[in-house]
Length: 199
Image 1: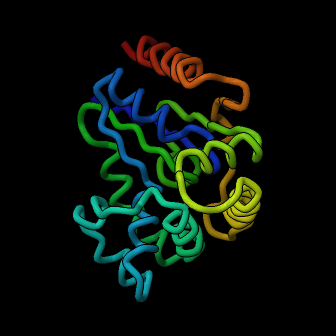
Image 2: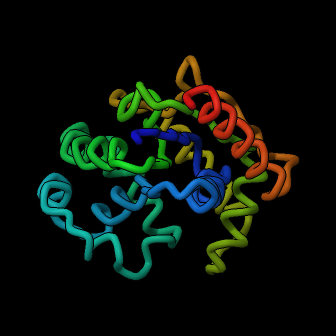
């Protein structure tokens, strides 16, 4: 069975948490596409060469969840050549047998516009900054993280190639006032309904 769930949204909205829970619930494979860009950014050197030579080992390196890696990812993700180098990898993963969940910024709009389910997970900048600040556990103030979140949003939304935006047929999930379990249940209900329609 081919069944693709595309989950997009800005940083720290809850995409990864929801995606991992959905993958476990339905037995789907999961790909955090942001890790691809984080790995490219953290490899250093020419980002285009880094993207073309990306290996599974690069995705397993330490520090990919750090604030620095997130900043590096946002900088290399604006390069069309980097995005192009990673597209085929993501599309092949999405159509693997047994179903797949991919989360990122352009899954429903560019990578998998034919996905069976598209969710756009979002939350206020203030809520996302607080989550990222608590999650990272690094030095720096909440205000600094909020400024980084806003700057990253501006880059992701404003880039010319595959900007962050909801696909026209995506279901928006605003997690600002939701618990993790509430957000996961919402997503599970959407996916279960689509699976039932296909059965």
